[in-house]
Image (cartoon, rainbow, N blue to C red; front, side, top):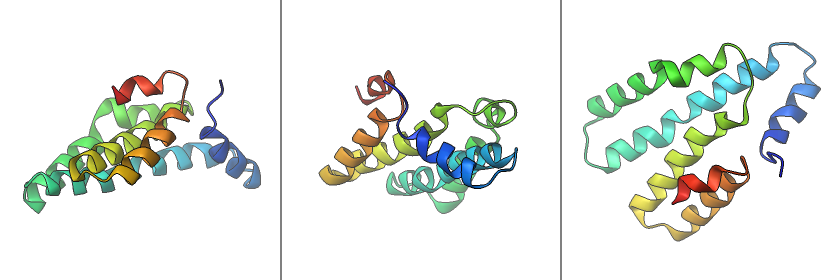
Length: 116
């Protein structure tokens, strides 16, 4: 089983024939995870300042940001999808849960383990 969701990234990288397109897109995808993370923190009752601090910690965490320096990997989609899944779980939004769960399953063959 291949990573179907990664094909979106590869198709876009083919359109823009620049060597750093994939790296920039990976950084953008990883940075987008700040949006559901911040919303999740605010939904849990944290102040905007505390949510901002959590998002800054996420952005500068070496495991997250370090992956952008050397290789493109399909796991870049997991933070944004998992944070979105957790946000919908907290809000009891079944449609959002199902859509984000399906997208998580499309990332990699072992990604459904994160849903358990």
